[in-house]
Image 1 (cartoon, rainbow, N blue to C red):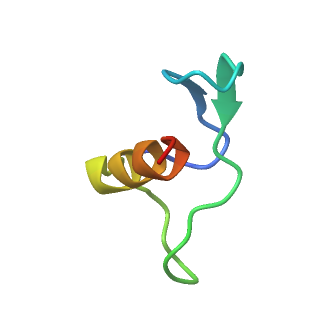
Image 2: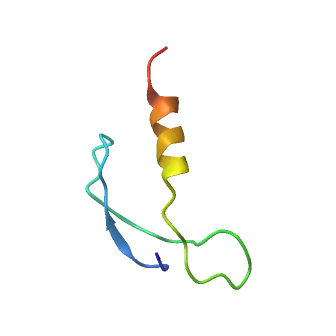
Length: 50
């Protein structure tokens, strides 16, 4: 699980190497976020050339 202020290593071709989680979405008292493959797949499809 990912908390706010967690440093993460990036594994894509954006040029960034490390990022920080600054906000957890999904409720006023939610403390943890989860990595989801669904978001990674959507990101890859949207960047592909048609």
